[in-house]
Length: 253
Ligand SMILES: Nc1ncnc2c1ncn2[C@@H]1O[C@H](COP(=O)(O)OP(=O)(O)O)[C@@H](O)[C@H]1O
Ligand SMILES: [Mg+2]
Image (cartoon, rainbow, N blue to C red; front, top):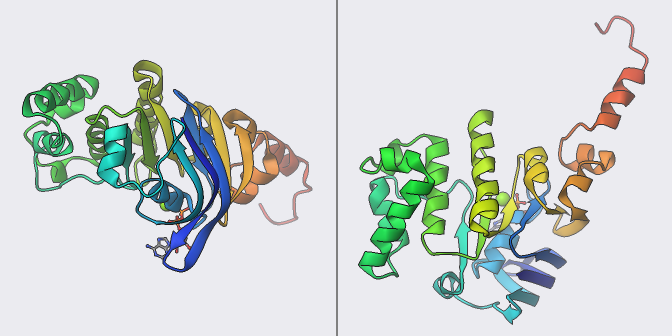
């Protein structure tokens, strides 16, 4: 559904992504993991026409989209939930949803907002509360709902689990899997919670210093002990076995 070929991009004259190619197949979850500063956010913001596109192809449903404005992309069915999930803190949950649906006829926006509160019951409970008073996890749900208001085919999600308590982050992950499984939405997500993201994901890319180091099945990346421990801070089974077989250093206990 989304295809990026030999993309070079960055900010001003500074190049961050080098000849980068990725594909996000329809109705699947594609996960991008990698250390801080690798260029993951830059990739999403280049697709959204925010970071500076230099060369290469960005295709959505086989049509080139580079150079398109954010609202044009929204019309085509691409929706972007930025890192930390931007919501308007001083507006109520309802007004945030209405803001997200501002391009639609009023009646349609209202129906859509009602659907969102069915999908995310917690939003119904707090519909008149200011978004600023929501907990971190609730705010992420609202950000996802705002992205969903526009009937996207493809959602780009940037580190939605960051700074959440593990149990809440897990909830957010389950909601993302539900977008794929129940609504058939294609997801391209960047995640810090690499292990969980690779477990729910279908396809994965490991990005390091603006380049792809691994591409393949998401669950297979978890069986690459070297990549996992070097770049993702994930201890794999073989690491643990290696630890057990190491001679213990005298006096270290
Ligand atoms: N607006 C910007 N202007 C200039 N450089 C930026 C900007 N945003 C990010 N960078 C740089 O681009 C590189 C990649 O950043 P980013 O895409 O945010 O990485 P990641 O999301 O993988 O942590 C970093 O070196 C960062 O300093
Ligand atoms: Mg980032």
